[in-house]
Each structure stands twice: as C-alpha cells, then as structure tokens.
Image (cartoon, rainbow over all chains, first blue to last red; front, side, top):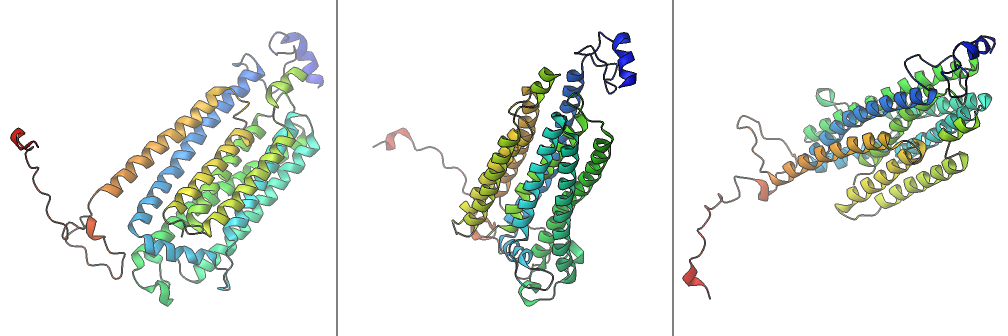
Length: 240
Length: 138
C-alpha cells in the first residue's frame, strides 16, 4: 500500500476512486473498462472453443448415422472397469464431479470479488482437487480401453467375439471417443495449471474486489470445460 | 469501493448453490430418461436436457444474466453458427443416397445400407411427367 499512497496524488484523476490500482494499465480509462475488455476477449476465445468441439460433435453425429449398430455396441464397453466388470456410472460420476467443481470455481470467484482471500484459495484448491478426481476416473476408464485394445482407427484390435466383426464402426467410435474425451482431458489439465497459478497469486494477495480479472476469466474457461462435458456425457455414455 | 463491488458481484452463493442442485437434478433426469426406450427421441431428449444444463451454466455460473449484453451476444452468435453447421450437415446425410466407391471392398457385417437409400435397389427416378392437361379436369 505504501507505493499506492504516493500514487494517489500523482495519478489521482485516473482511478474511479482516486486511487491508482497497481494492476491498472495506462491505456484503459478505468479498472472497469479494463475488466470488460478482458472479459470480451475471453468470450471470443470461448466461441472458438465451442466451434472447435462443435466440429468434432458434428463428425461424431455423421459417423453415428453411418454405423448406428456398431456405435451402440461399442458404447457398452464404456460401462466396464479395468477388471472387465460392468460399472455403468463412470460418466455420471464424472459429470457430478465436474458440476461440483464448477460450483467451487464460481464460489472462488465470488470470494475474490468480496475480498475474502483465504476463502478464494480454499475454493480454488477444491476445484483443483475435483479436477484431479475427474482425471483419475478418466485414467481408470482409459486403462480398461488400453488393456482390451479398444483403440482408435488402425490401432483397434479387440479380440472378444462380440466386437470382432465389422471393425470399421468400432474403430471409428473409439477414434471419436479418444479424440473428444482426450481433447477435453487436455483442457482439464490446462485448467489445473491455470488454477494452480491462481492459487499462487491468491496466496500472495493479488486479488481484491478492484482486481480479480484472472480469477473471473479462468472461471469462464473452467465452466466451458464443464459445459463441453455436459454434451459429451449423454452422447457417449447414454446412447441406446 | 462498495459501489464497485456491487457492479460485478450480483448473484452470490445462494443462487450458485441453487443452480448446482438444479444441474445435479437434471443429470439424474438424463440418466433416468436414458433407461427408457423412446426410440429415436432418446437422443433428442438427452440433447435437450444437456442444452438446458449448458444454458444454466452460462447464465448463472458464467454470469451472463448480470453481465453486459455484448458477452451474451457473442455467446449466442457462437451457438447460432454451430447450429447452422449441425443443421446443414444433418440435412445432407439424411437426404442423400449412398454411393460407395467402386473399388471399396465389401464390409463384413457392417450396417447394411437401407434399401430406400441404396441406388442399386431403388428404381431410377422417373422423369417428371408434364402437368395434366386442362381437359382432364374433373
């Protein structure tokens, strides 16, 4: 605060409250304008994310139209765990984990907005932990697929009787499954990285009700990751 | 300071928690709906519930209800163009005949092309008959 108190006199006319925030960049008139600009950019990025995944969803729809029987048979394998026992709830549990993590994220943003720094850190750490739970469940699912050679495209080599015939459709299903859940998983990993960076900054006390832009924008990113899973879950785990 | 806080922090923990429970309820509803067989309506129901959930996330978790409208306009534009993309693709696949390449080996036990879409099993389209003449009017 000692540096900002001297700034009060030299830059008094800049800030809304006559105080120059250390994060206020010169080319913005007010902190609010700076925040709105960042948010607008984030929303444009979100649209590119929606279109990126949208292309994959359209491809999935086209291939499901071409191989309806194979897609339904192949999706039954998503219900099995690494021991080959049926466990139909991986997708549903991961949906709940991500929804709760979205809630902890938005509570973290709210805590940052209201100057509750300890609470911000706690909610951000909770979000990271839930993201890790999501990835652990994904790991259990993937290891079953790897063990049974339920792999995309040319790597497909499942030997069980029910899937040995007509591998075109199955290989296509798993190509889309690994591409889409894999790309989504990479987004979760990136999210964990961004959240860890936020925790570091929140512990340092960077965020106040005046400046919490990074928390808000990473929050938006995290909700998009959640939103994509909301569509992935019924299409992959619930088709019948 | 207080006025600034108010301008951004609408919503609050109560609304967020209520939203979370709504989302969890809709998740259970999707799983329950998938256990019934509504035929081809299953996909429509699942996607409709997913869209409601995505809208709830966008409106409350992503603050679009309280935000400046420009962010909503961008989000809606994104989904609008995705909708156009989806719509024209499905119009395409559901309305055309399938012409496999001549050198493609026959697939073993693949889903057979329905006869209605197989150009080899449907009669060649008849040339349009000229409109009946006026004197045939009854």
